[in-house]
Amino acid sequence: MSLVPYATALALALPSYWLLKRALLNYMMRTYTGVPDLDALGKDVKDGKWKGKVAVIAGGSIAGLLTARVLSDHGFARILVVEPESWALSDEAADGVTRIGTRTITSSAGTYNSIAHKRSRVYQYTSIHVYQALLTMILRKLFGSGFDERAKGRGVLFARGDMNVRFSGWGLRIPYSEYPTSKGLSLPEILYTSRRTFEGVLRDCVRAFVSAGEKSPIEFLNGTVTDLNLSSNAKSIKSVNIREEGASATSETECDLFVDCTGATQAGLKMLSRASGASKLATLRENYDPQMNYVTIELPYPPNFEEDIAKIQIDSGISGKPPIDAKTAPWWLVFAPDPDVDYRAVFGGRRDNGIIFGGGGWASDMPVTLAQFREYAEGCKSDKPVPQWFFEIIDLCMPVADEATVFEAKINSCSRVCYERAADVLPSNFIALGDSTMRLNPRFGEGVTKAALGVTTLDGVLRSYGPSDNFAPTFFKRLAARTQGLWEGSKWTDYGRETTTPVPGETLNEGWHFRWYKSRLNRVLERDDAAGSALWHNLMYLVPAQYVMAPGIVAKVLWEAIFPTAPFVRRA
Ligand SMILES: Cc1cc2nc3c(=O)[nH]c(=O)nc-3n(C[C@H](O)[C@H](O)[C@H](O)COP(=O)(O)OP(=O)(O)OC[C@H]3O[C@@H](n4cnc5c(N)ncnc54)[C@H](O)[C@@H]3O)c2cc1C
Image (cartoon, rainbow, N blue to C red; front, side, top):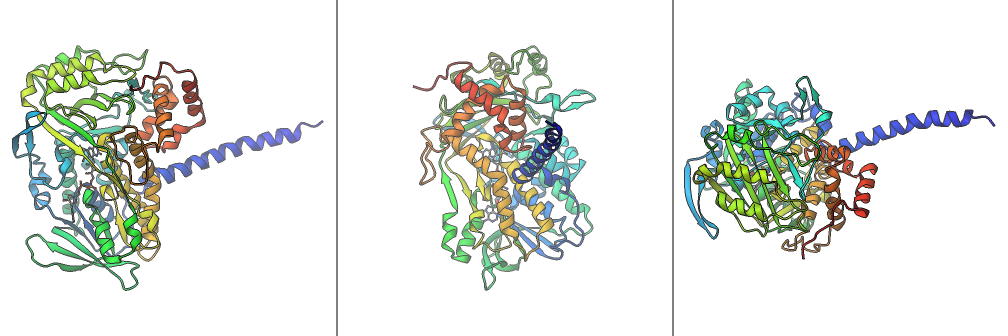
């Protein structure tokens, strides 16, 4: 019997398998992440399909500012950013003025000081914010080294994307070995900064970008977009009505591209429903209530902090790994229990020129002093307890406890507008991104990177589709593929807590398979490099969630389910 046919089949099978696998991975990266779009991002399009057109952006916050910057690469004759909050457009806002003092607040939890500021339309202005690696990459593409310079000038900390996370008490193996540098092992950088500092830096970057161009098409207008006017066949928006601040009447402005960046207001959907009258639009919005309460506590560094913290042994939660150098650790801990075990989560680390602690959860009480926060962290239940050194760090901060500023956040609404379902009634030049299409539970700290991912996706679609093409449906289809996992992951975790009110028509049982898998995966993350790497890259928006379902990882999760490392202690 000749072995030649078998040898030939094997010789063909191996490269074919390799090619197929590569093609599949490329497809998944292109479909479910924005990473492949980074290559072109920030590069000017000469004689593109949008040359000479007019864009109107409603909302000049994170999503609006990033959108204006991206559109400016596409030859638009005019990019008009309409923002109702006059202070947001002031030099003060771009100069990085973030507070006007403090005010004393008395709530059911106690009396405390909160930061007083002028950014009245952004509820979360003084809430803790965390960010992901994709965001840093996008900002560097859009603003070059200017972003780092401006941000560092305002105290923003750039450091490795390692927040010492504990899921259900278990550590996460971070893929340092995949990022060797001449100085040793490192990781892509993320920003450690407050939301208000970040917003100021972004405004400053856009202001610098506008003044650097000989004749920048970006204009800012203090006002509100009140209505969209459709073409006679309702296939596109031809103009918008704008009420300028202080004016009694609206004026009409021509518009070839409209981008809704109005955040939680989601004004685009309301205006579109009024203009189009299509009944389908009323069915696009999903909404649920996670009853998420959490508090942000900001502190200055106490005297001798660096000397004192250097004596504390911070571990990574991974057995056999050396302790973390406390002086260079940007963040000390994120302790996130399984929703089926406890409602509380706590976290803490460095930001800008100070310290930040956060704590809260589903239908949670709110600790509003450092002493209350310590007690709250002591109450956290998980497979493993909050590490003792975290309390030692809290104790180091007690001398400045009276200087704390506090923000209590209550999130009663998470929502997603499924525009991708409305290709047949959507005007071809209507876009929405940022919180205007999806407002996630902020417990997962993803909104800003998600807005940047939306803008990157828009850039990719603008490069191949013109105004008369299938523009908006293509954008929403791509965006949905890239963000649906964020919505489901966040919602299904929230459904693990009985205090959550689900989307009408759904029950809290939905997503049980996700919660089952995640609670077992958490234990695998601590001992398996491949699982740790897949989840870490996914959390940083660098690979699709499907990577965490690779066959090798699924097998280890199933093994954990059959032979658990420790008993699964559920709530009574
Ligand atoms: C408590 C809390 C904590 C959060 N923590 C994090 C975190 O840790 N990490 C993270 O990445 N994200 C976090 N987020 C989410 C993040 O802040 C948002 O995703 C982000 O601000 C979205 O940006 P945006 O530009 O879409 O909307 P926004 O920043 O809300 O801005 C909307 C803009 O639209 C303007 N506007 C409103 N109505 C109109 C109108 N009719 N016409 C024109 N303009 C209008 C407003 O003035 C505002 O400037 C948190 C959110 C909350 C509520």
